[in-house]
Image (tube, rainbow, N blue to C red; front, side):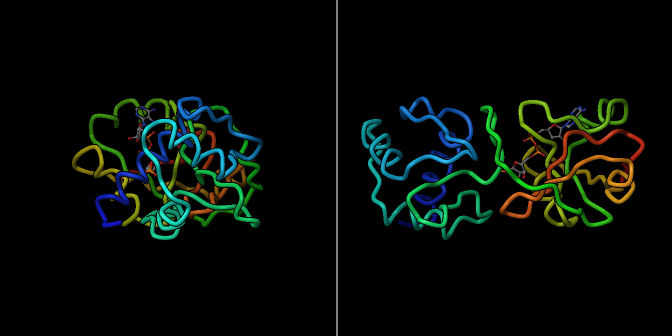
Amino acid sequence: MDKAQLTHLSKFLSLHLRHQPQELGLTLAEGGWVSVEELLAGCARRGRPITRAELADVVADNDKQRFAFDATGTRIRAQQGHSVTVDLQLPPALPPALLFHGTVAAALPAIRQEGLQKRQRHHVHLSPDEATARRVGQRRGQPLILAIDAAAMQQAGFVFYESGNGVWLTDQVPPQYLREL
Ligand code: HQG
């Protein structure tokens, strides 16, 4: 598959492994896992047949490591970003002292008032470095970067999780822990 085909398949998988598994006749098991066999069958039924090798390519080559197989290779899941109810069973983790969030100017007034909220997602997504945060913000326009005092939040009892692909997750970031860069 060329790069465009990989991206297309990645978007198709994100849609179904994060948001609409039922469209492929799938139900996410605990941890967000689905059987590879059932996924391939569901894709074929939906008129988008893919081979096991193509699936392995998308998992391996994905720019953000969005998907992962389990240790046996028989199940697959999205590493983060779900809107359907799923418990990824991530253990709480100690965050770096500073985390970052990329957003756009239109969101700032609300963010200044109520902090970062998870909205449709399960968590607020935070980046471990500014460059990553900038890329995230860029999806919506001219990016604005916020620094998050994760050390202070952690001390205050907020819980953080690290997804398998290096995204830091937490329930919310109150405004007092945010600084505009
Ligand atoms: C903003 C992509 C108003 C927030 C990326 C963001 C990431 C508020 C938008 C991952 C707000 C939510 C997640 C508030 C937050 N008022 N706006 N109180 N709190 N916002 O897409 O963090 O390609 O749900 O700043 O790379 O942008 O999907 O979250 O602009 O890792 O793998 O509301 O999605 O990864 O947008 O991105 P999103 P996000 P994937």
